[in-house]
Image (cartoon, rainbow, N blue to C red; front, side):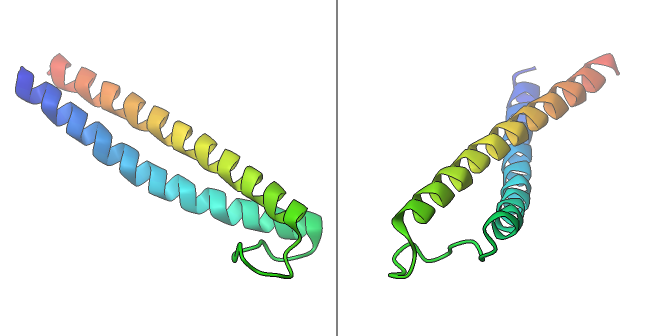
Length: 93
């Protein structure tokens, strides 16, 4: 029984990692696309660029960080739900 719990925990961690990477990539693309649509400029990718306005850099950093946290939470929740479903199927068999 303890081995099953370890496998579920490991599986959940691997699933969370995979989903977090995928969600982060999607979130980055979405933020970049929305940023360009709203401002008309490409998303800032060099924080020490002297031409980058401080307010614009701060707003972009806040939006990108908030989106990253949201994506990570969604990925973790999805991995947990999948692990619970898999465990339920294994115990039913």
